[in-house]
Image (tube, rainbow, N blue to C red; front, side, top):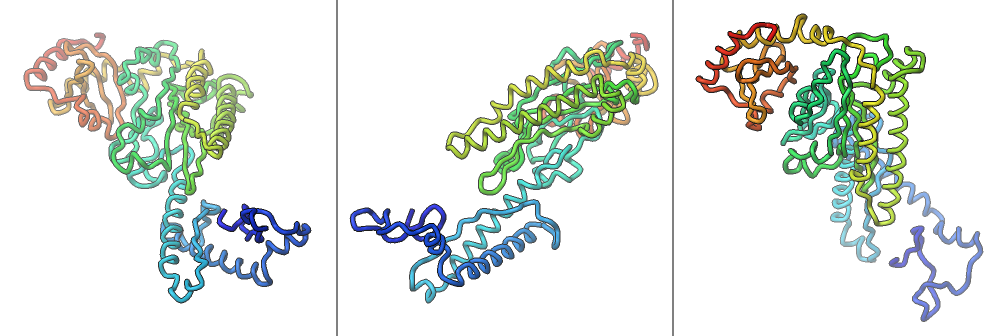
Length: 431
């Protein structure tokens, strides 16, 4: 221990041959306390050092962006301090040690603030902006969910129906059945982080270990009293890391809040799907707290857990439970679903948009071998090459560009566009 005991005090000299580990005599408890307290004035001197360090830490926080007078989200820092015991140290000066201390303190404060500020309930951290508060951190519509980060660290969002299509999930038809059903999808953390490049991929201040996306959920969470609209609810297991190796697991909700679910439960008399969802969220948070404590203990014992693998069973359980919670709660009719698309039957709107679309608004989906019509106001319609309407979607602001950038959607060639236009012209609204 280099002449120090575990509490930081100097050890008394030992008997010869004992390695300095045993004192000549065992002092009384009061004597030991006095010995560790140091000579008169030591505590006052230590207090001045700690106060100077506090001021240095506050200055480092303000250089990192914390406003003057703003409460710091970081309660304390653990920093390494090197103290020279060489008698000649005073004459040589402490400039290098002081410079190293300020540099280390600033680096740890930057990391701590990044970890503390990375999490905001109901939002996803944007590595590009270095914040969860920017406009990129939330979806543009209630039917979108988090699709992962782009290469440069910006969160990307996708409409739930489009997510099912991308994953070749045949359950998409259930969303628009006469008695609509809620379906859930489990997404692994590595799927969401997979496109990050460079330093963004190494930044673990905020990580999504996995998520369950459920939709389309009644706007009143199945209480039977709410509006006709439906939404998507995403439950994420996230991990935030702090300076000094600290980490925390949380359950993050996108698309709703526990307060909203609780209010719906109360409106439904504490029964039904809203109440079951409320209990499910609370139970998931409790299970995650237990996992977080287990991970912290394992870390201290030198046998760190693979928390992403440990969280997988919980996420799979959530996936099944989210579907069971809303089983039978699909209170919207087929007519309501169609009306939600654009005031009329979706086939009518799709054909009208397809006939009006210029050639530059037509795409060919290389994976599905279908034609995509990019309509106005974010609408998109999927057709077979012979003009049969497959489905209609709502695209996020940059979703078409994202698919095009990944070479999934390409512009139609002249002959393809001409053949599609002829096929569309022969179709009636009913077919």
